[in-house]
Amino acid sequence: DAKTTQPNSMESNEEEPVHLPCNHSTISGTDYIHWYRQLPSQGPEYVIHGLTSNVNNRMASLAIAEDRKSSTLILHRATLRDAAVYYCILRETGANNLFFGTGTRLTVIP
Amino acid sequence: NAGVTQTPKFQVLKTGQSMTLQCAQDMNHNSMYWYRQDPGMGLRLIYYSASEGTTDKGEVPNGYNVSRLNKREFSLRLESAAPSQTSVYFCASSDLTGPNYGYTFGSGTRLTVV
Image (cartoon, rainbow over all chains, first blue to last red; front, top):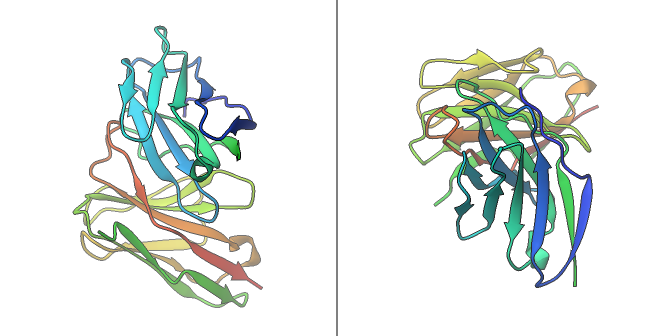
């Protein structure tokens, strides 16, 4: 599985934007970039995914670098409910697994 | 709008006992998965079922068996539980196995083997 690198932890103030970075320098041309988050004592929750273009949905935005070697998950206004571990995952064509690393633990400060 | 339902939510077993973890999804998804998560770690794939009638091993299959009972249900069985199987178990489903599809996870079963 192609690997991703994320900071272990980040902090954000409530109601401010949060930019969660992810490096994936060995990404191949057909790998999709997926983001999941896991709130305390819950299962992972799908957030967003993309291939080459930036993506927006009701939860977040995904900004993908032009060379695709990095991406950033953007939460436009952090709330206390956004405190979670965020996982950046590469999904390979034909792979039947989501490879979860240790993710970034986001703390939201009131 | 239940999504993925796992039962039980909590279980304590003695070493050597057996049990089956149940998982059901109501989204008409084709693919289903079993993961385990140990403290402070990411999830690891145990087994998956790409479609009804098929199952395949994942990253950590030893000590487990699975059954894809029908399109909705995918069960995980521990034949002889060991303390090393103490973990949180998550079931997930997806419409298809391709990389352009997201997974929906259940809320987990917290298993302790003493």
